[in-house]
Image (tube, rainbow over all chains, first blue to last red; front, top):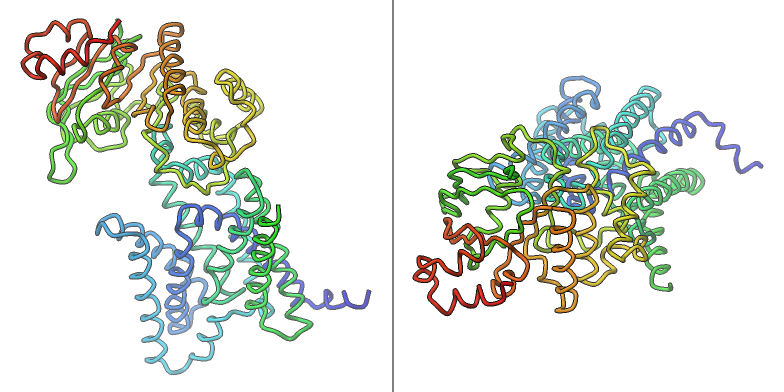
Length: 268
Length: 250
């Protein structure tokens, strides 16, 4: 089929390959975050990644090498601020997020040389993903998936009823830290795909779509992953043929699936 | 008798506020303890301190003869919390998934749920007469059904102690009766030790053999029958209140 010729382009292959992995980790983690009412941590951490990428560009270091550890550190900071200052998690996310954005803007203003580079990260472009970024995405996605598999029941129990989970000997503080660290890695990987502004959509939309459709936690993770995967593949394809920005197209298709799921749920 | 739970001079604070002061008690195997007291008296605080859900200001807790900090055999203790407030109502978990969470205390990391675990969950659902609900979501069930599911989660690990925090709150009188008879049966036939928190002291004497009454500190801990004859309790509660607590005791 002629229409499938676009699959021969190496940039499309890279986009599909890296995008599929990132889609799956976003959807799996997103379900835990949505059910814990922590959806906006993705938004907050993506803002931190703006500052971290700016720092990388400022010092001439590959941005992701700076962004991954810095965003992971910030995710711990969010937990610690809400714990030590006894404020709600959303306020802690707001604080860290604002500091991240402000840092990025100040660095961009001081350097005056990398504004174009920095602002390209706001909306991402998976079609411009490099081979190094693909390798990084795949390796880190495997790490995230392995940790989810290893701690699946601990994550499930602590998300369902944290207090009860403690009475079964699950170290819920450790599980909470683990979840935010995995989210930090996932957010940085997603920035290249959909951009800083839209990362949280990748975490939230597949999860809430699955929650409309299925009974059972395991099924919800599976459906969420399928929805996310289809959205990315369809989004990249549509963006190629219609000459639209890939990240925004992926998010719009995700939103479309969510709308269909709501209509389906109402009809049954 | 072996002490199952032992607390020595236990004090718990919420910030600067004193929640429990100097409570000492010893729970023995086979006890059915009614834990009573007015609202805000520290009943739930005491249970949460025992379960390690709250930090202790001072004092010592031993579970099955082991210091709580070193204790890791949590499958021996089944817990049924006060209400579902900590549980997200939209959570997609099915009944059988929820019940299997009770088995995690017996698993080492990486915890895995296998065929025999699912079979065990099914058995306990059958025992409680709710196996027909196993593929339903918890949020679809009535308050009484949800309470039974959480009881199944507490029972699935074959615990030696069951701790209930006001279990009858969501139940109608008929379900409450069923529930209490079931707990009594588990206590009498299987020898499971029971600690049951209640603010309603008027019926607990029908089931429990010991009364633990707290009001920020320990007011009374001992046999129901002794409580009813205790002159000190008579002057503490007054004759009418003491009679109300005692009169249904068999």
